[in-house]
Image 1 (cartoon, rainbow, N blue to C red):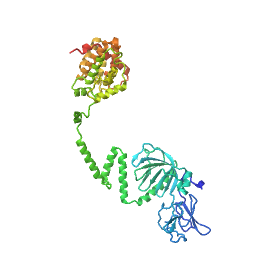
Image 2 (tube, rainbow, N blue to C red):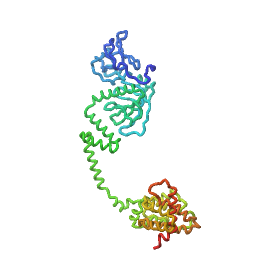
Image 3 (cartoon, rainbow, N blue to C red):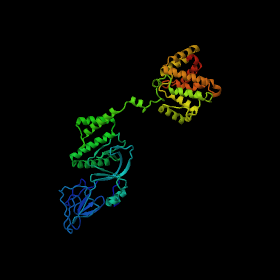
Image 4 (spheres, helix red, strand yellow):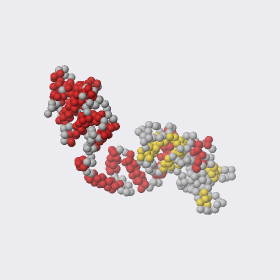
Length: 499
């Protein structure tokens, strides 16, 4: 029995054949009719080789009032509904008589398939796998079973496991998948009424073409019986799935096209629902508090790290950020003779905790035991200057400072750098003055903390002075950056005279 089972693809023999001249009845697809030696009409299934006496398999099963008299086959002209009978159920008692159910197979075979959309929700990955596929009764079923187990299941359905996917063709659409859906060849795209989408593929163009013809014919036959109301529901369901899957631009285009073609209303009234949503959203936006009021109430506090220097000073009504002043006071209070001051890095996790506290707590206390390590405070101060959107030496002055430090005449070089520093905006100039005067006091304790002018310049050069865009000669630029900071430290009393 199993040796006759198809290896790759099966289309029922007799689907397009003429009825046998020896048989008065037309055989359904997959069946043949002949007369037995005892003059009895026998129907034989090409798939399972099962033989069934009359009544004919395609006939609508009728009850016989007399159990001893076999039911007569209905004429071939009588319209029958395929897919209502099953060959494995030989006889079943109904009321007082017996009847026979036959279910015909439209097509079966091995296909590669994957599910791309599950009820309107697009799946992230495609999982292609071979599957034994059966088309019968307007339903396309993908089994996980092997061909051998599926063959036995046709005669004994209880041996088949639960289908992996079952797709009803009623209201579905079928098309050849575009290249953006799959790079494979011979791919069909099947969209069901519930918004799910499947890709079906076979390497043989002839086999996939027969599948395309069979599925399309099934959809066409079932769609002919689809009521007008269900058709409108199908179209509105498709619209909803595209709403979820498409981009915002696609949604707007769909809305414009639907408005131009006329409103598509679901039973609940889609237009009225949209107007209600718009009205509620408008009221919600109008009742929202302003950003300024949230700041005044303390619900929102602007950041300190990463904020522009001019904006931060204006907000704090000071020419030097409060956090910079706190750090310098704390470092000098704990002692400038600590080894590696500003050179040794503090614990990065603790520095990030301090940064979070600065951004979210106005009452910052650097004397708290959590910030007892002075290297954490110096690390946070350097991080503050590194995260400024524009460095302490503005981008507009970078090339001028580099050109000044390249001057050969020492007096002219010092005078040019001094004039450039004095031309800086007030927040930049005052912050530089406070910082460099503090660094000069650090250098005065160089014998204890081992921080010389050159060491401090190497630490702060790239932090305070950097180009807006990276250059190819970055190594040479870094040397000039350090020289600018070193010159200002050496000429600090002249560039920043005491008040």
